[in-house]
Length: 392
Image 1 (cartoon, helix red, strand yellow):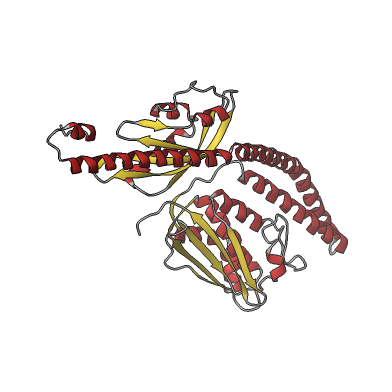
Image 2 (image 1 turned 60 degrees about the vertical axis):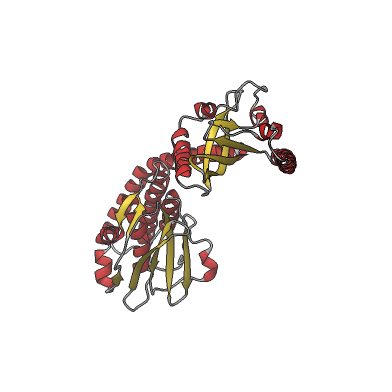
């Protein structure tokens, strides 16, 4: 076994100049360790002032270096929980979060130096849950592939998490209320529409009855749209790899009459597979394509569907472009608002809910939808579909 530095200094056969060099080395090493500890202490103070807590894991000893203050913030007494025990942390993570935490941590060991990030909940002593975002990286040891350390920080986002939970509960209550009201109004409105239709048939060309019938029909359509809009928030999107060209083909089946009548040309070549719920994606494309057919100019519509993978953002960007009437720039900001109609004064039927539904569906996939347009030259809608990277 190799001698320690202290043992070497005690040897009589070691030259004095070599011993002096060893003494300087030992002193320099001690000074560097002291400076490192001082820097760590300063870093901890700075992090604590921002409710950020540092931690480390040594994979040779499985020792965890944590902060007692982190536990004290959640109501625990010093020493009540052993922060040096690697398994203690995972034993307390919320059951719904443990699988994601383990997946991210395991993945970080396979990609040394690459930053990771995950969100987890940990129990407070009062029985509630605190919520944290953990970020860090695994640093490997070049001399030992089985060794290395993970360095990370925990940031308290409990207040944001609780606000988000309250907002989700409020949204759920609102969705249930809208669904209930829409359901209760649907049958009476159907009866009103049917009665007006009979009166119109009996009275002939009565302008007043025709106006009333159109208003009742539009109100009934709005009730149906409200029910659909409310239902969208009840079940999460279930994405899978789906051929986009197949979804486009399915979406156009119900639009065949409009495509034939208008003489529209639809170009959708070379589309990739995208990570999306096929039923919900079909609804988005159907709404966008229907709008391109409805808000057209006298010449036949030309509609293009494109898609490309953005490696930097890990998402597909899908584009639906047309050569229709276009939309004034001042209308674009409100375009995805429920019941807002950019062409409210036109004779094209509609309730103004279609694009709001598109935004809700795209948002359920973690993406965003935007629009650009030039009046008289057409509109372009782009939406993103985040998903796991996939080899082409």
